[in-house]
Length: 138
Image (cartoon, rainbow, N blue to C red; front, side):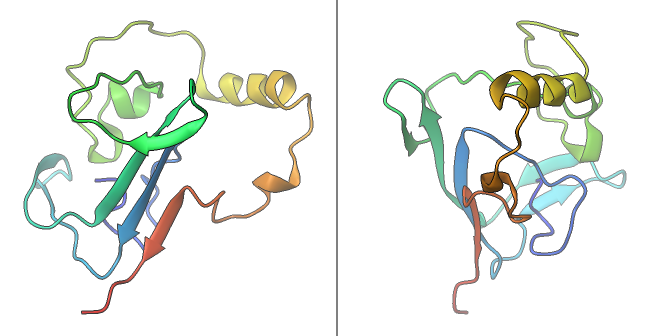
C-alpha cells in the first residue's frame, strides 16, 4: 500500500526499521483503494518481494513468516487514523498506547541511541539499502 506509487514520491511511503524488501517497479501496483483512498484489497502479482524481518536474537534478517506474530510500533496517524489509506491496522490490539509523540521518539533516539551524533550512515537520502527498488525486464 505505502509503496504503490514507487518510484514516484509518496508522502505515505513507510520509513521502516527491522525490515528489508525489494520493490519491483516494473510491476503495476496491485493495491485497490476506495474513492477515499482507503485500502480495500491486493489482487494480482505483488511488487513487494523478498520481505525479511530482523531477528535481534541472531542479528540477521530472515524471511517473513505468515504464521508468526510480530510486534510493531508506529504513530497514531497511521495506526489509529488510517492515515494515507493504511487502514489494515485499525482493529489490532494495542499493547501500549500514547507512550510519546513521534518527535519525542526521534529526539530520544538521537540523544540516547546515537549519543547525540547522527552519523554518516544516515546521510544517504535513499536510506541504508534495506528497501531496494528494481525494475525487471518486461
